[in-house]
Picture 1: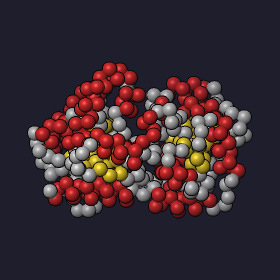
Picture 2 (picture 1 turned 30 degrees about the vertical axis):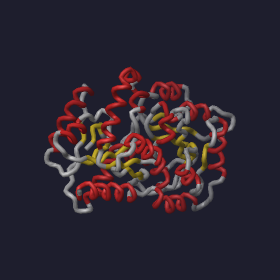
Picture 3 (picture 1 turned 90 degrees about the vertical axis):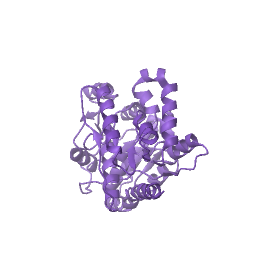
Picture 4 (picture 1 turned 45 degrees about the vertical axis):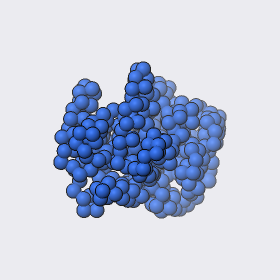
Length: 344
């Protein structure tokens, strides 16, 4: 179940679908439920809670892509006595960043979040940082908390980059994604000559991208259908993920979907250093690690990827990424925890 609206092709929809299909292949009867679009988000939220509760009545266990406002979970556990497994992809901090007015209610929301996590029969996190965050909330409670990285599935074949080459960012235009750094790097004297910057996505930072596009600094595509976004990504020379360490949420978040998709398409990635998983990605052919949030350094790393490109490198990257970017660990963990919960 998911309270979050799962737009076709979004990272949330891809993740949700991969886990649902993977668990269904184990022979479990599985019904997917997410919410539909509406002009009134508050109404959608209330309706989603009621729909989820109705479905929970007939369930042995609920697997939930967690949302901080999922108050229905407490009724599910305390009234219906139906256990739930939480898939944790972030914390309530994302809501506070996206909707600053909610910070005035942070004490109440943090308390509700703590109850949701504590009452979960099991937790599946997408990074070691989120696993540790959930464990910290659970305290001495013994319910299992595990983690598995995000994977990806691409429906277009790896291809060679086009000429003239371009750098691409595909994903949410959120404050924590380092877009200001990326635009500053494009203006740096270290940026490779003749290399354009393409951006595809939507979100809070759209005004910044619209202004940059009007000045010819960037080619902004807006939100693209999934197949078009993958096509744009597959032909790029470099994919970038310059997430900012100035946002605490980035310190414990999982690998963005765009990184996994880039790797499977054989497109080298320049990404911020957030620990072991980032370094694993940077060890793959052509990929590089951004150790400091410096626009010149980002531009230098992009130029180094272009200068170091070799024949067959993209095919080698796509081949090695098959294991790194697989959904199998996440599906296996989800299935294992669901079996543990239902066997009690």
